[in-house]
Image (cartoon, rainbow, N blue to C red; front, side, top):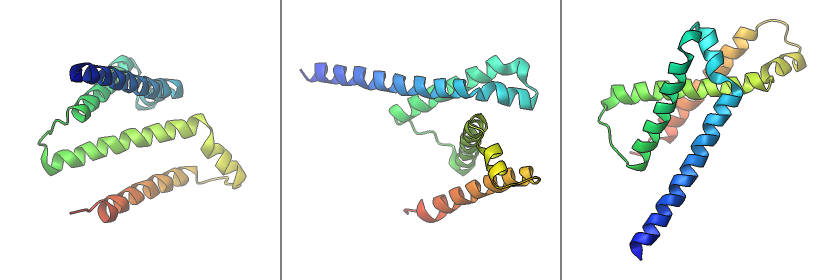
Amino acid sequence: MKMLQNGILAVIGACGGLGVAAGLFAFISVLGMIPRLAGRLGLARYIYQMETVIALGGITGCVLSIFQIQVPLGMPGVILFGFFSGVFVGALIMALAETLKVLPILCQRANLLMGFPVLVVVLALGKALGSLYQLYFLGNSG
């Protein structure tokens, strides 16, 4: 009986995980984040490789999370992982903001005629400083 319960839980968990992952990748696809990044970086001919690497990263993250595999990378590995995670989240947020036309509407409402690049840098710095504050002061449980 216990094996049947575990099997049903495994199927439910796998279906839930597949649903969430499919939703995330569909969201990224709808935003057009990968083609925009490839176009801005001049890497349009590598778009399929970029999509493959992102999908493999998602799969690897799921496997490491589900099976709780510890990867001994040390502090440099943690810093590198944090950097790339931040770049991904930042790119996702900016693609969403660009799709929803948040920044142009903000500039129009604030009557901002120049200084748009400064606004983007200030938003990025604010996000970075807020994350560092949270990680350093609030994430220190030891």
